[in-house]
Length: 169
Image (tube, rainbow, N blue to C red):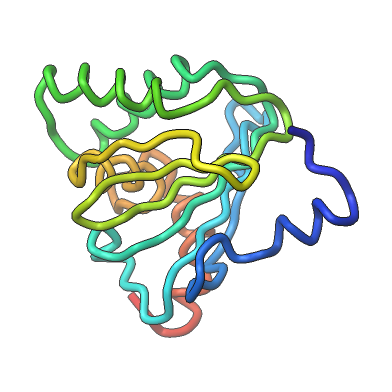
């Protein structure tokens, strides 16, 4: 799904959930190449230090092609920066995430929705493509971008920009 100009551009600015606002956005680069653009939507009063207890939406617009397997494998590696989990959890979560995600192509937009105490839902092109109904998985998964232990602190700061500018943590 390539993002087109016009209607696609307008759709790109629409909030993915009711009651949320765009908090910030940034680009993940690896060796100077853009991997994806990330955009974070949160509710008013969002507390970055307690991100796991609050609903939020994170959209990634890919600048490269990736298989679901590659995304799942890398996600588990990044989740290890955020918190500890057993090898059994890692295997179960990687399998669940791989099943929940599609392969992505340049221009695809994948939306992840964190549902505290429930799990994660993934949407693409306006429809649910998969779910991982595990609250701890969801907290650690979204921690890839939002935890102070993220491997990408600059991107975290960009995503949380509006919450910090409004005097929130």
